[in-house]
Image (cartoon, rainbow, N blue to C red):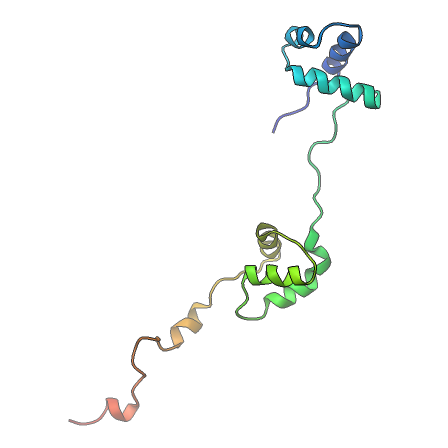
Length: 139
């Protein structure tokens, strides 16, 4: 990730612009973009400082207020993330699929199929299982 330019450079650039030099010549002199010079000058006029603003920060999780309900709802079978997203929309919570997945993943939950349960069921296209008498019938 890029870092902000030094405060010393910013102050020298803004002082040149404030003294009346054209923005383009100041940008060429310090080998920076014209937009940097303009933005720093605007920041100085608005706030009186050329210090950079905060970069990054903590993003508040929208779903934290609904944590208990979501975790209880996840425990129920046959629930998909898209279904959970639709239920949240009915409750008035607008959230993206990705944000919902990140929330569920952060709490160690998964939507993987239960393979053991799938194996124990007879296949839909196969014939019904025969009884023991049919299988062991003497010929």
